[in-house]
Image (tube, one colour):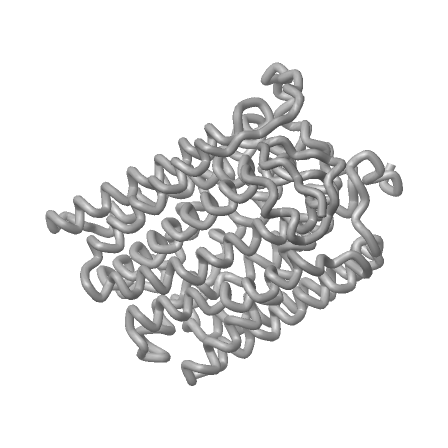
Length: 426
């Protein structure tokens, strides 16, 4: 058996067996950094959501958490995409994680001194949203540079599994620490972000230095033009927009944990972890057996299962069934996310990945926060159960509509490299 040198250079000639991912130290460090960063974010989200609802008992205020994170995503979309293509993506990640570390420290001090307030929590959410607006496009654009192109689909699935590992462990750990004190949650968040910063600092990328475009208005808008001219990318990104806006059930989990299922803070941690349990199982399978055929059909099927699982969760009053529904929801969403993310990354050249990733972030991640506001607003008017049912049934309707509007996406069989992508759209 040939031995691959333990270097930080991704050699395209290396074979693409599943176990080869572990032969790339930069990717392993990046994977671990992603785990720690997301664990910290998930614990912060649990802490903030619980404290806001404890202070106000308002579903609308839970929704405002999402809206406040949405604002910097929209305002900064053009800037963060160009930044990710122009500057060192590892530096951007470290700075964003440093912002989150500062937020965790601020909450620790506020809770310790008894000065925690609704307004301070909303300020913390704004800073978190700003940091993530810069971090996620840079993170996504960095993934394909850490492994040979032949390993890109498996690396993307493994990257998604890092996120799911963190989404499982973060809320569960946060819920357990909350039993001792909220300050212990804030301290653990700061430790997680500090560890992520250290790991990212150890990631080395070996690639030619691309010429940097001057920051003109046209270069900043180039990502939108690229997506507009490629119908598959347009379809997959807008599909995310509408499904995610409707599927903001996680924003209402404090209500389900306290008022409907009556399981408290520990139960809230388990509810927040349940989607990631299903997602982790799915991404582990996908990292070893990536989706290679009938990609479009499988993506739409996953979105439909996501909608059905959301509906079951909304109707459930039995804690085990609620956990199971969330696990199925997470598994279906993970399959859909891996396919969509792979499509965006593989069909986009490296010079454009930051800007296209920023657009994807706006339509996916920031629409997730907007979806939380939508769920909170509907719940404030009609109740949490009706809000979740609207999201589940709406996701089914969106999947059916997009399958009709984008037949090329539905019939997509295999991924195409960036050089060939979009030929049918020309």
